[in-house]
Length: 189
Image 1 (spheres, one colour):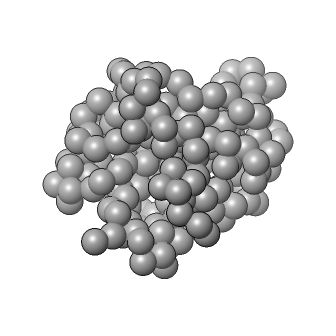
Image 2 (tube, rainbow, N blue to C red):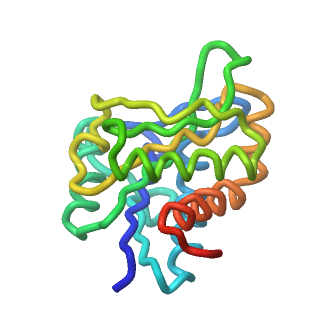
């Protein structure tokens, strides 16, 4: 039986729960594309089965921030997925802040160990700065999912170099997450 991975492309295309914007890029668009690439890569590997929270670029989930997050969790829990990966881009008022980080609910869990594989895979492939695996039990999608869950902040939209990576190397981000997943399971490419 394949390992079921639910990929949540963070944020809606517009309105409620829309994401950050900088340098003419919209977080929700980048998250969507990278999530689709990742799902396609995983579904081409017979060891995995992947689904995404947003199946079209225009699809919005929920009618408020809270209901949007709740719907993403409901979809993953009701499948049921074995793992949950939420894809995001970061933003900061300081344009010098850059890099990649992963968030998990708590230390030394399967979520934490998965994040410890995804993060260096992105850093190695994309050349982003490693900002570490961080604990954030307040994040709804990490708190309410019934399976190991990782929220990946790919890079900073508000940093020029990171924004260039996010706009031109979307497949590389997806493939890096895939190689991190393979490493976590001890699988070869």
